[in-house]
Length: 170
Length: 409
Image (cartoon, rainbow over the protein chains, first blue to last red):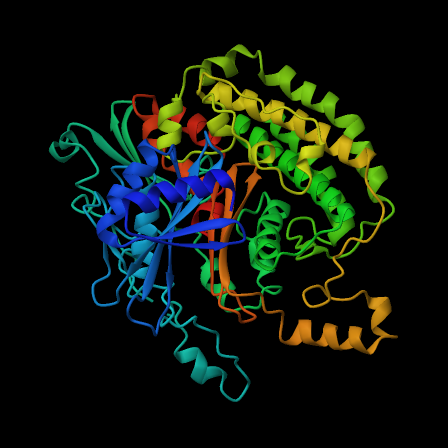
């Protein structure tokens, strides 16, 4: 880990209860949901992380506690540093506070996480699906969501498979 | 098949103003099949006469589930999906993905492979900017630029075909190096392009830069301030046109970009014209990089020697048992990176293209997330469009240079 990043992480550890993991020079900061807003506010105003690169999530199904990690990838232009904040989310109540008041571009990213993982963001101004159709059932990037496949058709079962293929038929 | 869903005003009630509900302003649907939305972008535009009150983008029409599909394939096989994200920046997508894998397994890339990667991604940047200059000028009724720009783009695609066998879906960069070395004609073809291209950029500039009609349509239109750009995570030429000199090739160099001498063009106006100037100058800078990289193109291998991750050369398979076993294992089982998660970003023609890659120690990526620049850049469209005429909306969409394959993934 770079010395500059190390000192940022140290200052965070003094203020917030968090765990830090290091991998290939990157710092991954694990924090509980209740400290998320304060942590990001602090990072943006005091530590100069003025840009949010992305928000995404990972599903660790069948593990339930925590089932998801929501990942906030931050970028500091003035110090040229990147920091990853990870928040564990349980399967029973997948809810996090929205960070749109701190980083405006989180709006669409949070909609994407809701669409793909079914994690709700409390206080989000417009939490609709963004990539999938509005009436879609399920959340595709969850690990228990099947990938889907095409059944191979042969001469003997062509008609039978054609019957249940999901495209518009006359 | 579910029924085609119709959107009613009730569902977007919270997005439009009170005037729209009372019928004082018009809510107009634009797209997804519209010639100047550069793909399948749908906009719900609220209009007061001809003036835009609000423009709400509706995306997802090109969603292909790339992230889910990549989780189901081995690391090597998933790479073909990356070409299909941002189809104007295939080499750049390949680079972002293989760099994430190389970071995950700490793999070295030989200098020759790095230099060829730089040459090809910079050519790709020029090709992408050529499509942008052609189509966005076409939207403003300057038709001839489109024809010239596509002529030069074809030269670049011919070079890609020469190297990878494909014009667009290249999959040429592989973890640890390249698919194979460039053919002997490559250097001459690139040199030929470098020789003629500066005059061609002058030609485009002669048609547009001081053209009063073009200036009328672009100067002062779609202004984005520095603060708004940072707040919305805007990157790439759009950010640099708002006065922030931020380019990942310069601030955190990868693939040996630190050896090359080039500038980051910036402008402070933040309007459509500033974004035009930044991209045109960027084409010239990219050409400088190509020229330098070609002049000192080193000789040597183009693939790493680490046989646990990189397949051995064909010539070795016939004579070495180990090589045969490695080849067999790599193409049946795939390689197994260590457990961990990395985020690696490159500068694509549109901005910061980042890949979040998580491995659970199996031959398939556990999670791949693409931080695509167009996604964040499109989010500022309501800010850019507010208060302008509907005819200017076309110029504004063109100027942020979105690719819908990049947004919807």
